[in-house]
Length: 402
View 1 (tube, rainbow, N blue to C red):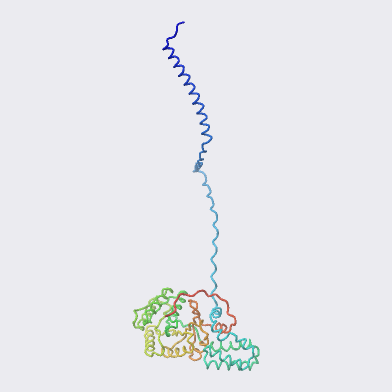
View 2: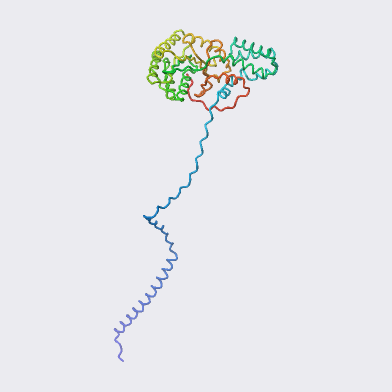
């Protein structure tokens, strides 16, 4: 056998090694790939599941029922507004000071005996409450005679007799506020400064506007710019038209303009404010008379001339009323601040000495606290030993007069 050529032998060896190496590498790569895939599958996080595709609506089929929304919780009903106060409740809640000065403890006084000492103490209380000396003497004498004639010994019965006498004293007057059937009802409002005159006009306007009436205000208090501004503010709040001119204008002309405006608007009510003035100033009182005369050239007559008196002034209010009565023939009194005084007897004195009825009373700061005077409510409130616990609400930021 011939020996192989060394070069050929080397080539054969190289080829064999390459073939063997390739086969071994293929085997190793295949095994490693399978192991790596397994490890990768074991450690890789699971892919997120996609949301299923919405089902296609069937056009010909019935529309799917809409899901009912959960029922909303029912809203809590707002608290009911308190019922309006009766005249009795309002007077009893507001006349605490007058009651303390006159009626409080009176039953206890009568329980000690219906003797002369009891009548003398009652006399002192009535005079202190500004009932007036003349009226007090007649009331005491009337009570004494009734007690003697009817043989009254029971203190509660004696108190009932006193209430009856006071009702008779106050009950004879006509306290209605005059209205006219055709054309604007015209009320002229007057009084001294500081009595609450302009505020009372504003409350009257608000009350009547709330009742559906058309109200016109005439700002004939032209001496004070503040009075014009205050009345304008009340008019805006009440929804009432305010007729006004510049400070210092002729008040009679403003009053007449007010009447013309009220007539043109077919208004229900014309309220004419006038300048506060001291009753001792004769020239000012004559000017007030002029305002009334000029106003009546258009209105024909004034349905009411209302004098605003401050109840806390007591007997000084009587002298004021006398002067205004002479100037403009006062038909009624608006008695303000009755809730802030122990001199509630001034109501009796005004009517007894002047023959002028109290038609409206101020029992607080809110609009509703300007109340029609109620004789029964007033008398009962004066002698109520225990004040009724009635919540009247907060003050109306309205505006005491400067």
